[in-house]
Image 1 (cartoon, rainbow, N blue to C red):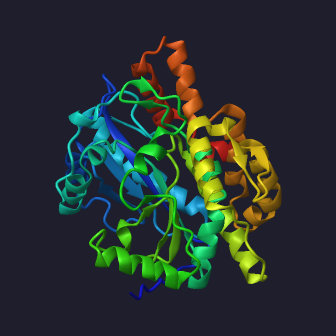
Image 2: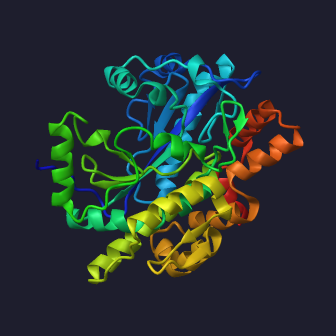
Length: 385
């Protein structure tokens, strides 16, 4: 099977953000996505952003245009959120985002009426119906198809860092799970989801797709649901390991990290250098550690078994790549990672709210709603620095 890889500007950025729709009073999810989309209608036609439905009717997804910078992509997302609010605010619908809803139940949710979603649920059954998960996807343009699989293998070393920074699903169906990112472990139960296979080159990826399509596992490349995957249609690498971000500045920071990592690896390939890789069993272990412990995870960061706290290895890496961030004009956004480390990721804030409210998860939902609505915008954060 030949899979063409589209041309895209090198290190360009595209963002997708899955957003929950909730009742303002109860905080519970509401199946009003189709109503919201119908009300928006053609009002956003011609805009750089798009607003679409998702697997469940309690969700809308906002997508940026292709940004030359993280700033441009995030501004698209902010404009899309504003357009959604013009419809949801008069209807008493609140917006929030996290990897999971603290107390909603899967059996109360409705699946969007599309063939691809009904097919997914029919095949995956209980696990599919439990996919009450929200995430972000970061696309980064790659200028040469031969770089795609080597960069993906190198990115698996840093997926646990991205997972820990974005971790926001400590609760599931009303229970405290003990995990920072329960979403990441739930999502990998779907066929073709989870960590990418360590494929050597594009031909190996094409052979993988050929096997999967020929045996009826999937119809095309869009059904590859790896934590980081090629997006041949767009000419990008798509990072999908992150939980849903709770605020726009955090989305900016993680997007900048993803963009800079891809550009860093691309430059090293241009120079003829080998990219860092870990044994697949270390990669798998690191994913579990980040899901379980979040920012307190000790990661295996060398093929010799060297271990470091995720924040310490992050600091080492940032020291190497900050100059690249400045060249890509996302240095200020990247600095937002320091804020997450210092002030805590979303899962840590949610746990603190739950403890202060004697375990009342309705308080956690209201906290998430406030953060999404009233938390500082990306522009506010940059102006304050």
